[in-house]
Length: 464
Ligand SMILES: Cc1cc2nc3c(=O)[nH]c(=O)nc-3n(C[C@H](O)[C@H](O)[C@H](O)COP(=O)(O)OP(=O)(O)OC[C@H]3O[C@@H](n4cnc5c(N)ncnc54)[C@H](O)[C@@H]3O)c2cc1C
Figure 1 (cartoon, rainbow, N blue to C red):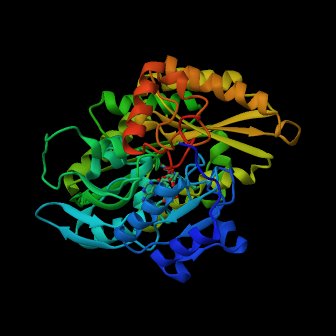
Figure 2 (figure 1 turned 30 degrees about the horizontal axis):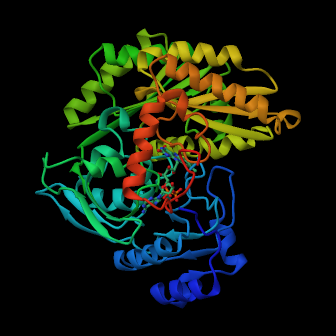
């Protein structure tokens, strides 16, 4: 179906009628904030609608479907692959007004939230009630749960608790033709039919607009202990992570930073870092008071035996908070290192292959295209940042060549080209490195079954 890349005045009128005058934006100055996400890709949408209910979303979709208008669901726009960018013109549907948080249940260990609820706000509300929503993307202060479900966001705690997918029980989804469906089940188990809720998780807005989410919760762990360990080499730090698992520990976080990453956030850390430190690990354990204390003692011992220069436990909540604030600010802080361009990748490999990956990255890093690596080492998810000097910032062939090498290596080591950020616009040329043509054809046919006219986030993930 040929998409119509122009929203006429008549269509604007119809869309405005659905959401009400203040909630349909068309003035260029109002559209600019919606023209980009955190990827650096940008394109102006023709209009932005801010619906307040699933019914309104369905009505918007029915109009766009009948007229062949491209539609882009959008949360906070913190995505790093251009997923929410209106590359083909058309309508952005911003979900931020649909931010309810309700029905937190201690018995069913569930809550119901709107897609526009901010992830950090859900976590705070759960914690206030003695409950726990574990997925913690570093963007949790501003990203939305709808965006998290659509990208299957991960975070530091994924090593023990898993990713967003593991906490989605049921979804309400507005399909491209404006029909509202419920997928999954609020029951603790369900094997009824194909698991289409899982297909929607991580679908990056290609299959429909998520309008309601039932999340699985856990009881809040009684105690969290946070350790930091400094190492004389990045390899030793990654070996240290493996040793934790060999010792029978599953920490709730094992975050890794190389020397360049450390230098980006040095001033924000609640402790001094000596010149001999080439790498930092943040390790957290949790559980009952006794279990957390026992695991922290074992983790300290293991990390010291792995050759750490220093292992210390954060003394109180203030130090902990400062440490995590610095860690969560790392990605933006890299921009202050003086390079002209940063290209971020998020490969994920089996833990046992991390040292091989690191050595490969060190081998291809060079002064004009330096590689900085940090990430969720506990689950092998390394954020590989290619940093380019001014002379090379526009050299797309060089960038493509290095990125392709990194992705090929990840797949060769049994890993994936993206552990949590997704494909969007940034990685669609690389997806065939990981998925065979038969698998890609299957994926396209799933997309077609959900969205036969191809209006939902067109050309994302797979090139058209
Ligand atoms: C500083 C920083 C740190 C980050 N750290 C992490 C991290 O630790 N882990 C991680 O996984 N990611 C991380 N990210 C990436 C980003 O925050 C996540 O991808 C997040 O899930 C995006 O949420 P959002 O609300 O901003 O979605 P958006 O960027 O608005 O959209 C992302 C994608 O989801 C789709 N979408 C959004 N809402 C809906 C909906 N209701 N229905 C259907 N599709 C929808 C969009 O079309 C788009 O394809 C980070 C980003 C930044 C800037």
